[in-house]
Image (cartoon, rainbow, N blue to C red; front, side):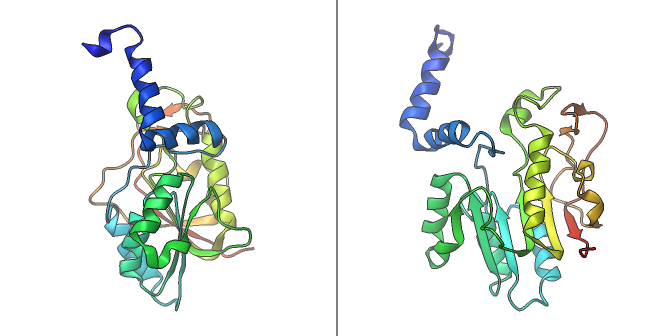
Length: 233
């Protein structure tokens, strides 16, 4: 009944983003970080992708101190899940959402300095593995399912984000990418990567996908998760 009142929806949105800290931060991100913002909604969960985490632990077990980046770490659940498997690793979590970074530091005080409110790693920082899980997507695309993603999250932003991560990934390093709305194979850097044959048994294949022209792609899906960067040259 309240929704039917003239202007009620607009008023509800104003109240939410003005008085509720969670939505106030999302509103700030949409305005202040519009050019680099990907997924504005910080949904996460404990041990959300165990198959990926287990496989990375196996692939990196010979390194004495693996350097790992959790890109879009939200409240740090992914970082903590990785550290349980690789206590000898250095794991950095970055996210533009300041409230989520504060929560991550509070939940993991012994490693608080490894959580940063940022959209990119520090210059020159290098990693043996980079995870971007449920980052290159947007809740509004999932909700409205438009024929083009241009106005919400264009493909160019996906490609730009991957190029950034590629700069910080060591040769022979691993890129973990899943729950996104674009295909890695469509990116210009894809030929420099090999595909690890890992499938997500607990997760469905990705079907809501958009191409380099920002148009929705019908009749296709994505199941690949792990990609290995080939040696330079």
